[in-house]
Image (tube, rainbow, N blue to C red; front, side, top):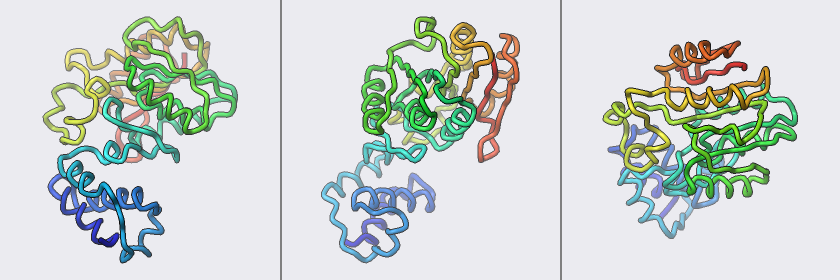
Length: 276
């Protein structure tokens, strides 16, 4: 089997799940991962022999809508590689924009709290990019904390991981310069509109909230941050695009200032940041 044939086989296997461009990108990422190429090298190796020992298993899993990141056991985020698997949310490119904003605002040596760390993508990326940062990351999932700890070690950074519930009192964690979170925010009613590779495989506790209280995590984290943030400290959220105005109003009522609702590269309102 050549590289070209491997790519074409994967494209056919996932053609019912993804549009042609996404299918090609997915197929190329698999072949690059298993054959040790980067994307620029791939184009000159299309007709080379391609030996992938678990190729049939990969094709079967992808055709069953299992996310490619779970199939490969890793995801790229903020120029780093993260271990992922069932039990942790796959880090999204949009979240990289949130990390970039926090990293740009953070002073050297900042004490940073990541609430709902999952794979540790936000915490590890900030520990890597903010000089001297003291990063603490919390999650309620033991599986997530174990994977996040491995990701910190694999990427050569020190992060303190603590089991904690974002909906409970977190004041025991101490005082911080920055609190950042990408909490669950998708209303349960939106499940019917979402793709199988998300709904059937990624952890619902990291994605979905009840329709009747969709801002529950934002409210709890913001309330906790009133005591956990230093005066002038920053609170940064990734948000559901429909909730920007509501979250901004809630933060204003709580006494936060300099509130900004920001759009991502796709023009969707996906971030809110403010000062205590």
